[in-house]
Length: 438
Image (cartoon, rainbow, N blue to C red):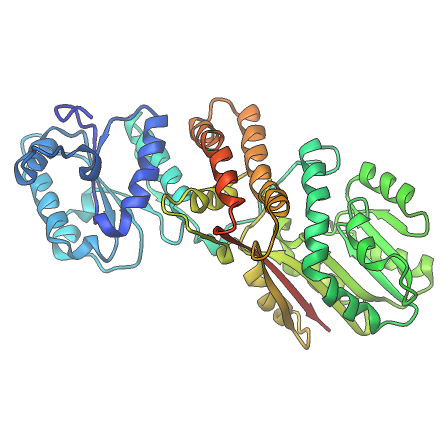
């Protein structure tokens, strides 16, 4: 970094935000924006107290990462005061708010003249991307005030992905089936054992192969019904399981309730005894609407079973350079992965539609006790599809420098991450969550 041309000076509290600063640095490099931060650019022979004022004096933008730690940091305060002293050539200031701290007097003093970027609640990958966009907009002469939704309110991604028509997705789903079975077989066996000539409705059934691992050959099930939006997947389902009943439909469409009524009439049943949603809610924009509709078609004593995911429960250890942590955060923002913290919402969603006996039966699929071959397959299940999604996104928008930077990073580290993953001393927990309610 050329100290005489620092571009963006990043003022921050080192211990609490250095990982965000490093992520932001990658984004700014993708935008070809010069920037300076102390951990990288202070040289061993430099006098800290002399260099920083000189860099601030020459910078084109003063960026403050504001959180409760930087708000009371004496060093950050000195940097802010140094920026404020440049009265002949005032330095533009941008404040990125990371939490809800009440601004100190010095920061509040400049608050009326700066651009704010609200990053509260966002993980570091998303926060860096949004902040990079704001700085790039400033660089190109646009005033930017970014108001971001809290991460818990992010809408499910609109995905045009054809799950069956996409070769990568077929590969992932085939790998996922055995892991889901191993994770949930005992619980599904218990649910099905309660039925007598029952009906099993599978939402988002794809080819039916996943649910049939639990259902096929069970005398307790009279009707297996699958609903999916993709005709090619349903054609395969009918080929694989001629005794099943398969219907094309979108569970978020206005006519979904009419489709359920039609199925009940055709099969001469009063409702469904077990309704299964496996890795479906995370892709929905209005999951509560879907669950409310489905609850109205349960038989008396019927059960809804939901297998979902929450990447907030993922654990990778040891992860000293946070490669796995970064990959998980990238996953939450790829175009096809859905809302990766949907698992935590399931209990509230079921409560809101007045379901009873809500239970979380199991959470977390881990590498503990897995063979190297099983670990290799587990790694491919989760991390390969992130890489595949980044490649698709790059093909669709090659001009997106952030996606390209993340793709290059992932491809560079992918093989070494896999080698680490396969070691017995490495632990990874994937946040699968299995709920049921009556």
